[in-house]
Length: 476
Image 1 (tube, rainbow, N blue to C red):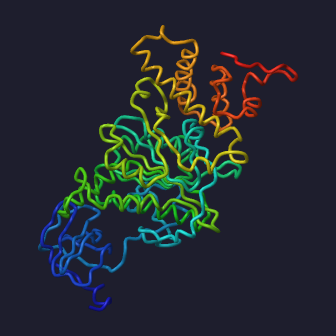
Image 2 (cartoon, rainbow, N blue to C red; image 1 turned 135 degrees about the vertical axis):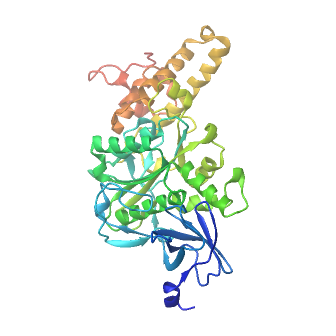
Image 3 (cartoon, helix red, strand yellow; image 1 turned 90 degrees about the vertical axis):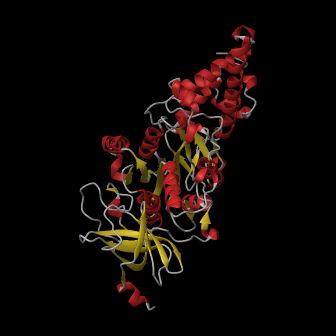
């Protein structure tokens, strides 16, 4: 069949409807992923996408849902085009549905381009190595698990933990130091409640951050299949802003567990063989097609940095979604329910956190020469303090030495002063300053992971009047 014939041919051969899917028979020439127009008996037109083809059958997912579709009076037209989105610089400051339709009562976007939401494959040799420090204003991230421009660094949360608040705070505070330029933010919310949507909108409007945000909002009562398109639409806009307009773009995806639940629902409707916990066996590949769209390109000033956020069911970090996400991405930020109960804000549990690209974005000319040593010492001292807490629960604090008590106090101060910061936007200098104030509560000879010249330069005990003798082995 010629392409021209295909574009004008309509089918009235819907076999049956299952959830968000319709199954069309006697279809010829259809291709995987192409867009379909569905016209209902009353004239309403909906949009769908081909999910599966086999011989003369085609499985189509309907973005607006299948309510009202009947097998006799509905026509299906295959367009032969992939899923596309209209993009423009004017999208900054606007709110869209998961498929890019305005939902802020504003006008339709006048497109500068219409792009395939699957993106364009990038030659690996064209990728540039992430190397620039991104200041999020959060000490637990900037000081210990530094985010680097072009990185993908997920946040693992639990049900009821304030991941949304942390995401909104990062969205409004993120900046590249030394360039005087803040990030443009593409914020993709998938399957969120109306309460969460209201929180994000009010926070962005109150702080003025909305002016630099492209907000894709898929609510919990929106069609499930729209949830699958939302991150790809957001990343297509991010690629346009980064590689056409040379902007630094921060993409925040929340909540990836809702995306994967939608993937599982569609897979079940397609009657596919399930994998772990019912998720499709191709979920790793599907997640990789999203996460791997972060990065930098040689010869381009723009960049895409990703912060996916996902809620771990039952706080289980071995659940398939966080497990596969950890394989693909370059580290993780983990929120702690115990710290949350004790009032930490944000409740970031430093010990299981990791940023694999941290060393590329810190040091002289980027943050400060003592940054690596300070981070290592914070980890070591806090880990020892945490171990002592468990020991105290068994033998009591009276059994501890004087040095052990100092480490115990260090761990409490670390959580209260370094981790907890509320809505404060901290520059990296203040983050490192707080760390050195905490080190001052320990004897100097315990700072084994910091170079001696950095202790001499930055230790509070060495910051006295000029000519004053250095004080060694001080306590508090």
